[in-house]
Image 1 (cartoon, rainbow, N blue to C red):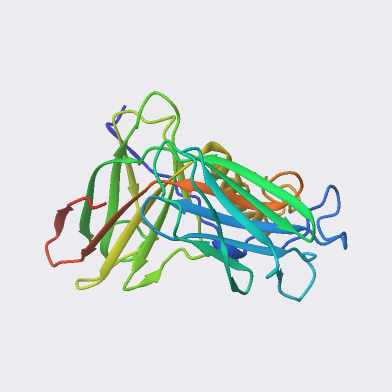
Image 2 (tube, rainbow, N blue to C red):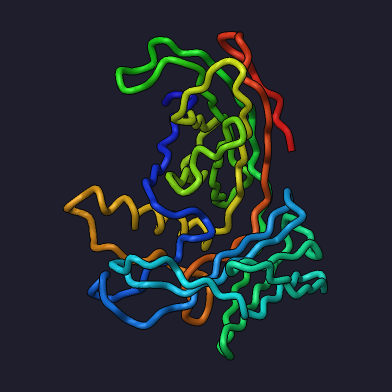
Amino acid sequence: MSKFRKSILLPVIAAVTFFTTGCYEPSDFNAFGDGERVVVIEGRVTDADSVSTVIVSRSVSALDSNDCELVDNAIVFLRDDQGNAAQLIGIGKGRYWTTEINGEAGTRYLLTVEVDGEHYSSIDKMPPRAIIDSMVVEYRDNYTIFDTIGYYVSIYSRQNNDSVQFYRVEIEKNGTLLNDGLSLWLYEDSHLTDIYKMTIPHTFVAGDSVMVCVYALSASAYEYFSGLSKQFSTIYSNIQPPLTNPESNILPSALGCFHASSVIKTRFVIGTARRRVVMIGQ
């Protein structure tokens, strides 16, 4: 067996970003029904950002041309298992944030949201950071007939421990996210042997500024993003199941996802060398 396994990223062509993924109506048999509007909650806390953010909205039918209804009158609290608690401040357009809760791997976080007298909650434990063995920038002029000549970034990672770990990757090029709702790049390490190679399916040129972020996810958050990827990939196939909402970890009956993620961030500039090993940042 080869020492390295090439990654299979989960590309998703979507019309939504992370904080606006809950605009569709849940359904059992009719994915395009006109059922009741459902509360949608999207939030995250990380160890790489001092700001914890939550967005609250209400869903619309999949056939509705209107945008989601953003909720500005919610009461939002975030607590951790260290005894810290904070009420998030509403800043308009359904957004709430706080800088009073620190993200730390191994800590459990409780999000509670009240909307018009209805209460919703979610608990997520922040997993440890991914173990990135190395990151390589390599120029390829004869990759495959389907790819563009240029510089490619590859991430080499290995298992964190004996339990399965889940990850999501975001790439920023010259200050713009390459997968800001257009694709979700997910992987898990249950199958890893030795080193796992993930090559980012985008080319770069010398002088490009790049930021790579690897988010460690809980199993429930990974399931949500995996469901989201299947939801939007369905539109390109006539043999896949009907459009359904991803499984939410917000109880009792809201859509969306709350996740606590440890993050590895690496920033660098593409040089002119044909092959270069990048130092892994924090």
